[in-house]
Length: 220
Image (tube, rainbow, N blue to C red; front, side, top):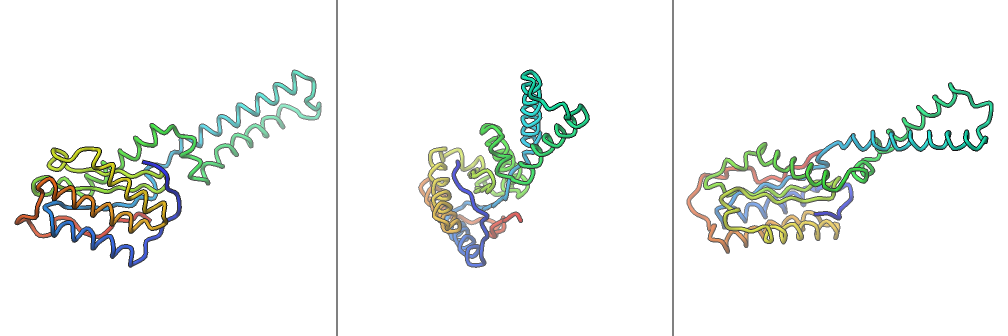
């Protein structure tokens, strides 16, 4: 899912709002929830090399064209041409290196989506969301740079809840971000998860004390 971009910072009140939503879900249902906000899901440095190559090729094409048309000044020698070429290529690398959003723009959407999903799955394992009774953990993963959100449910939940239902959860997160209230959007998404769990008979039963921390994870 796409369409979000700002350098979001979460206040103490925002974190409290999300934590309370997680706690309410876990009090009313048998599920466990983790919210993870990542600044990015990959470095996308290949985009830097890609743009460097484009700049280099364009420079060579320009030199070749000027030379063919006898428009290349005689004062421009091979050494000077090489230095300018190296500088142009370096500039092509440097621009996306320092402008992170440009790296994403020069990376195919399919690659970006795959990187986000891969990191979301890594976080699922890192946070041990799989290690809950009855395999009913949920991860809401938000990646700021790529403007994407992933919701991953463990096997116990995915046996009953369909992708269309998770899409509604994604939509609530994105709505909150578009409105510049990401914490409220996340809290609404958690509430929707709670409704989905209850509707599919994942009611609160006797379970171990809080298996996963309720605090929102935020990358700096």
